Amino acid sequence: MKRMPADDSPIILRSESVPRKRSSGDAERSNLSSGRRMSPAKREEEIVREAVRFFAEFGFEGQTRELAKRLNITQPLLYRYFQTKDALVERVYQEVFLRRWNPFWEEVIQDRSKPLRQRLVAFYQDYSKTILTYEWIRLFMFSGLKGLDFNARYLELLRKRIFNVLIEELRIEFGAATTSAVPVKDMEIEAVWSLHAAIFYLGVRKFIYNLPVGELELIVEMKVLSFVDGVKVALGQSS
Image 1 (cartoon, rainbow, N blue to C red):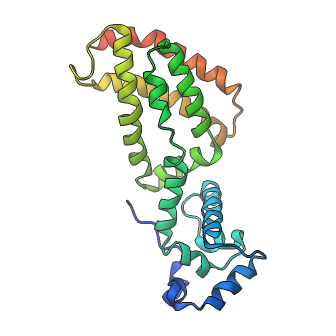
Image 2 (spheres, rainbow, N blue to C red; image 1 turned 135 degrees about the horizontal axis):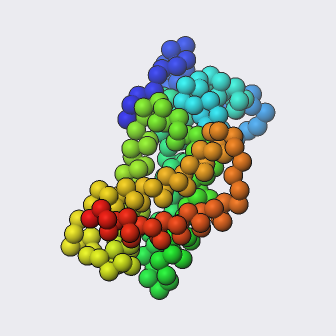
Image 3 (cartoon, rainbow, N blue to C red; image 1 turned 90 degrees about the vertical axis):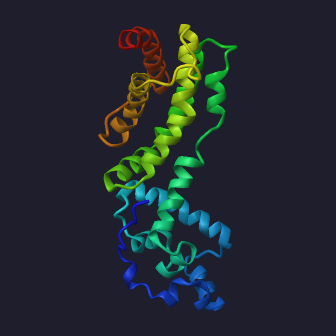
């Protein structure tokens, strides 16, 4: 993972950022300064929650000094929970991109008791509710612009857990050889990308360009059905 710039961390004395160098009284005063006494677990949750909002708003150039101000805590207290900015950014990735992943999505796509169109509409409607949010879209875009590895890691997960499964179901639907018999082709990946990118772009329009987006479920359904109608012909021509 590409390391984050040190931003304002040089002003922090190591004796302040290492818990054993601080007295329990110092920690208690830091907690009281926020106007609330909070358990360590609750404090950590609050830091992560606000960090997600903060980096989504300002990008990963946002300084931990300013984040601490928004939390109404001292910067040294923040660094007691996350010793580096890299550690905090990694936790944001885990919170937004991994914890929101639903393993049930694969089962939805593979449930052959239902028509493929119905399965794909159900999956993408639910998936879009997860990713088409202010935090998800903006953090994903800022990560790519910053050169972090969030995008590559997430897209690798997406390809293994969704794209390959979807291609297998398309082949079965169209009577083609399974992926165990014939490896996934580059053009099949491109075809799935065309659908996935079209849905992702709805979030870009709304949260990057500040343009209105209509009824999400109806738009997603339209895009999925258009994809299924055209993909058999497109892949047949490219095979």
